[in-house]
Length: 375
Ligand SMILES: [Zn+2]
Ligand SMILES: [Zn+2]
Image 1: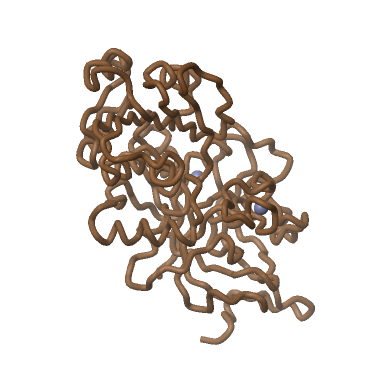
Image 2: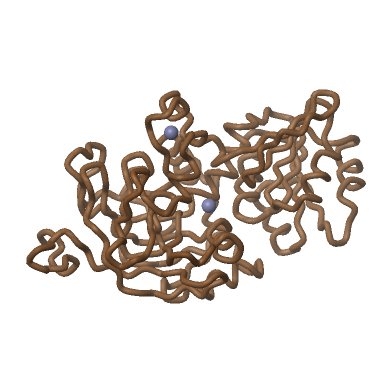
């Protein structure tokens, strides 16, 4: 097949526009509606990706329910995986037909990006939550809808990404399984491995055992932490935490977390990964910390508390991971059976996106993944 004839709108003046389907948010709280939209073809530094799958992350849900301001319609989604359909002139690292996993966006030119820390990009907010390119343009302009969420807007049949937020992956692995690596799993595992660098034998508690927290549990097991204490309000998730590497679990609706942690460890813990975002859990995390211990806050909070005896809190974004290095590392661990994140995933057809979101909100599904097209 040449040049995707069926996808191109053949207006004589305008052959560089693709008709795509995307789940559009027009009202706070949703529902998302699948609509036909016009997406510009890739610019010189962009890559058009046909999405095979997209994970749904809590940031998508929080944006829909709490942060959306209804001033313009948007396309969410930031755990895309798919096949490269077309590349811009200056793109070197991928070609048509390559399989890619999409991750967060960064500018590439600020001091943090240049020193290899794109998760600390000075333009992180605009590049991921700006719903436009960094130059202010928007590839869905012709449909009066805003895209470019996390440099992808992956709740769609097609996305525009750049080399900075895509990772080429082997064609031997199913893309629909790999899609959630781009945000939630990278964040949980990267927090333990890159940000905290949890050493063997350290004690750790993980507050919230959703996808991010369970990725942290698996990474803590790989690091040799002991004990690894999972804390959540949902017994089903706690049972899964035990199977994935937690040595103990605490149901914080039924048990006093601080007292149980003291029972288990004989004191407090050296590390807490706080993934729930509840202020009382943030306080509780500080309360159970050993001297020189660290609380990792995964909610975008700055972590500026000054605490006694060398304790500290760290605000962490995307587990300080450079996607092009870290995602291949997680894939290797997955293939070796040491990072079995596929056990968190439940698949849904793209048209069932609102049901997938509802299941994730109720906690019935840990990591919903939408099947968008065949690989
Ligand atoms: Zn930057
Ligand atoms: Zn996310």
